Length: 152
Length: 175
Image (cartoon, rainbow over all chains, first blue to last red):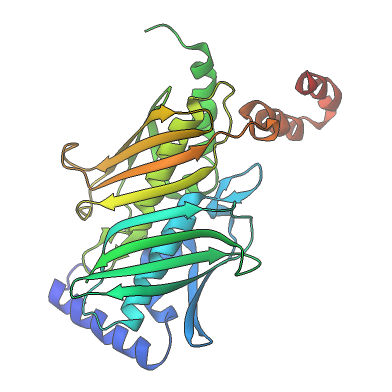
């Protein structure tokens, strides 16, 4: 990976993004991001939207006495989901840069699968606003909501 | 500065809980300094935490976790009876992309506590603290429940480790 130039890497990235869009396979985008594998994030197309999920794993626990998922993992997962949403559904050439990220924790993340979905609220010339929601049992009772801005 | 007995007990407990457990152990940061209402930590660069495969910059989620951990750790130390503090919300501003192959330093401070809420500020930097990569504000709830106090969590753990001493330790916990 290190002996490739940035331009080559970018071309390779764009090629893979194009392929992922054509094949409706958002998971192949996650496979390119090492952080996604580290927390175990997965994605699929579900009912005309993208659904992300994070299976339970011991290395994501924040509070072992409950046990509960680490708040930072929930935050990182939602930020990752928002970035994938932009790469997959909007026409952007590069990896979007995150500018700010605001997260509200509504309920503790129990030790089971977390689901997430995102919505692009506005796409400007430079700035994109995405809102993301994470839930476990019921989509109507989210465990966390997030809002983030990306520069594209 | 006077010797703070409670902090001397809480410090190793926090270090153990955050560095050796769950996601903290998976990330591999070190808590350099824990004082009452203040936490410093260092995080080495890791290639498996990259978020941008083109530039090799660590993923923002890693920085969220580091700041959340540092702010949470600071919040836990200011309570009268040290206990776990649930996060209410967290806001992060990314000032600049982190440079690859360099460690990230994080500092978090409690700047105000009211009767129910603990307000924290955190900053992450690489070369220059005045030129940070990210800044965050996080608010934590003060929950007065025995089940999440450090004391009861430690006793629960002890009981699990020494089942033959079930009764005497139970007595201590009940006092």
